[in-house]
Each structure stands twice: as C-alpha cells, then as structure tokens.
Length: 142
Image: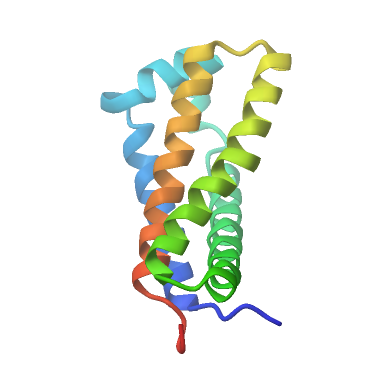
C-alpha cells in the first residue's frame, strides 16, 4: 500500500518550517543565545548562508513528506481522526528519532544542554505545526 499524500499540505508544511525557524532563531528571540552557543558571530552568519537555507528547504520537505505518509499509514491502521493521527504520529516520530538522536549526538559533542533543549524545542514546534497543517488537509479519501 502506498500512502496517500496531499502534496499541497506538504508544501505548506515545508514553508511553515522556514517561517518557524526564521522566527525562532531571530536575534530578538533565541538567535543571540544560539549564535553564542554554536560559536557564530555577525560575520560568520553572513558568509555562506545560501547553502544551509537550501539544505533546510530540502530536508523540511522530506520531513513533511514522511510525516504525511506516516500519518496516512497510521490513519489507515488505527482509524479515527486524521488530524489526531497526524499530531500523535508527529510527536512520536519527534521523540523516537529527532529527540533521541539529537540528545545522543549533543552528549558526545559536549554541546551545552541549553542548546540541546533550544534545538529540541524548535524541532518539536516545527513538527507539531507541520502535523497540524497535514492533519487539517488530509489526502482525498481520508
């Protein structure tokens, strides 16, 4: 069975990731702390910013696409509400893959725990918003 995916929802979820990241890491929000914690300054942020943004768009699309597919699989297996399946699937995938792996890598990288928490919270908010978008625009027939 191939999961049914609403690609408009995936594209909007991808865009939401970019909006959330630009707000979350803005200097007036968490950007100053993040820059200090990872060793960036104003100059280093200006240099080579295009490539990370392109990577972020591609990875955000993949994340939204996988979330949409996993949500459809969960919906077809469990039934119920497509919206609640999207939210629960997103949180489970975040906890099992994103949070678990990030905590492991950050522990070995000896990153500050505040940076790990900041990035984990950002990823959770991003996934929850993606799940909401995907959940309110299910594929045809869901």
